Length: 252
Image (cartoon, rainbow, N blue to C red; front, top):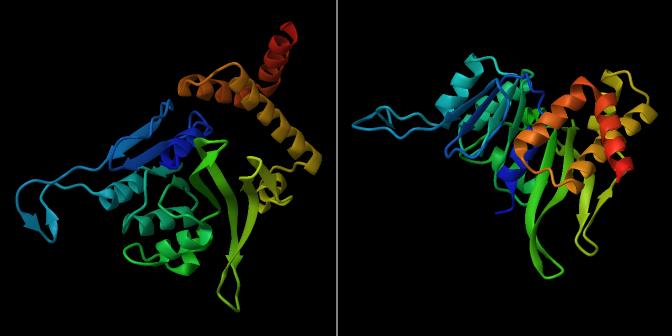
């Protein structure tokens, strides 16, 4: 009810259009317009039980192993619950971009769940996790709403204490319903360095993308296909998209 899958769907619209994507779910909820998207859904078995498994059953673990054989660029898992998480973290450690959800109300409880049974992810593998978004339902001015409470980066493991080092990038302020930026994102810094951009260029690029998103909100563009189309157009020709938006705004 906190909007985890809705957020997963929304974020996935920013995946490059031609990327190869494999999704894994128990119930089909992910919906993407990408032409190279391969959706996978679990299947119940039938008949006798062999090696603790019903004949014909296909579970999340089976789908996860099959996904890696297809050499995807992106792997989306509807919800992490069991042993499939170990294969997912192996994929993350070998360079696959992965998005997933699970039930947790803080970064600490998320780490506790990942390390505990039945998931059992070793702490050293948790370094492959880069960003955590904590979702929650809340009441704002008498209305029940969904909000992103925190955006937290996983940085490293302290060599002495073995504690996981984190950086909170954004926090939601429930008093005035705003989002507070901490002033530092290590992930953005890594992206900036890898692309050879100055800090000013990075900030200008972020401002342009914010402007596009705000324009889509203002214009009532809510179809996932239309949003993905505009995102893809911006990737191909950012100048043309920005000019079109500015021309439409100027004509009003």
